[in-house]
Image (tube, rainbow, N blue to C red; front, side, top):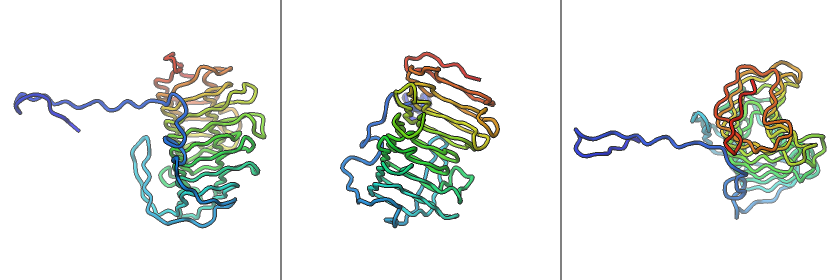
Length: 300
């Protein structure tokens, strides 16, 4: 909106207010108010298994970085409290929304397991959207969410060895993703990608944990399964005690290319430094710092 300051039309000075400054979170978002199931929400108990939807609705998603919108009919699960593995199998033209739900799991590998068979190479056509959900891995499972073609919006994800594993053709925005160092494996990552890419990671709090022998990276991208292209990382807060952002194009099947880092902030606690980039090309690196203001130089 353009405002007008001054007197008569001929003497007026046009003034456009500056755009709001976008910043990384300085700590975890507050569960129950900023992220996760809103405090006071009444939930219906279910055990494992997705079960029947609560409604079918036209759902509009808005890309947090570009503002692009898309509306699709979606099956909706709302206000459910699961206590076991939720398997998600989406049809070739369908879309699912899990909205203001909770999943707590201590017995299986995952809280939510997304079948990739019908995944679409379109960032605006995800198989699954999770909005304002609370996922808890009970300090014992491998990952809270596994699979690509997902959007996670304003979720609170904690207590799994890897918060989200398999991030590709995905949007992760406005979430807490805090890994545990008590899972079944030898290292923990908040977000973990092992191929493909094509994802936006925007304004999250990402924490790999406090144990320097186990906590690997708040964001770990490798090429064990495929080369990685197009990963956009903006305005995130990174915490964890081995690496800050780890991009390993030397991990197997190809390199990593097309990485954008803008406005991210690090807690200064990494044993091996804030970045670990190997075989990564075409990097855009702008205004990335520790929280004390110290600039982190481009690793490439």
